[in-house]
Length: 118
Image (cartoon, rainbow, N blue to C red):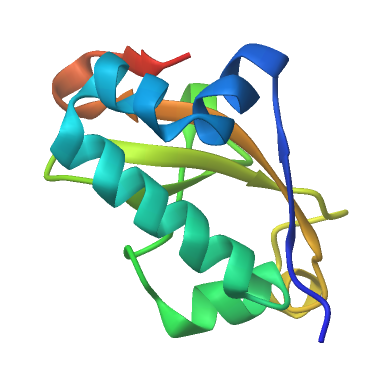
């Protein structure tokens, strides 16, 4: 069975997802543990549409300066920010989307944009 392909917006971001000890030092053990769990759940999905239908981490579409991205809960205010590689964000298109790009981990609530993993 094919798995969802996960790419990264930059090599710096990839380095955090390749080294969870580095991630733990950067964002703390609890956020690192949940970020890894969400990353592993994404990897286990066959397509982004399947991941959306399961609903782990309450994936939700983002707007404004993050239009085209999805947020996935890591904690109350912190989200894993991912972008599906698809011609549109319509659910019938996303059901076949086999690649996502991770932008990072951000606290974007309350009008702030604080990147925990840029």
